[in-house]
Image (cartoon, rainbow, N blue to C red):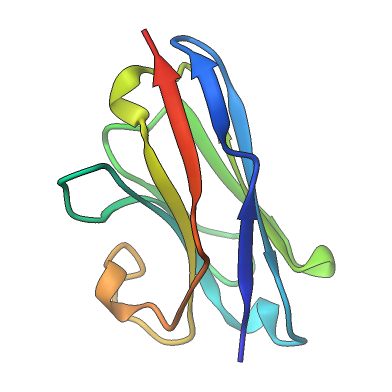
Length: 124
């Protein structure tokens, strides 16, 4: 069992930055690939970024590539999303997820655990 808690969301002006954190419980955090997804009102949950168990490989949605950076610290049972150059289209609830086995960690339907989400609002 893994419990995930996101933090770091908030209100920021366009062009600004935020750093999201995802704290995980349990002793097996390093066994899980991790991902960030987001959901805007009236839209489906969409992939943002993902990272493999050791952090050796990372993946990004085209819309955030070059602006967002995903990272993890297995010693701290934590994952992060550094978001720079934010724009209003990034406004959404951001969720972190953990997946034990998946053929594609960019797909939300393969994830085993989810956090409760943290709101990110970018004003123009």
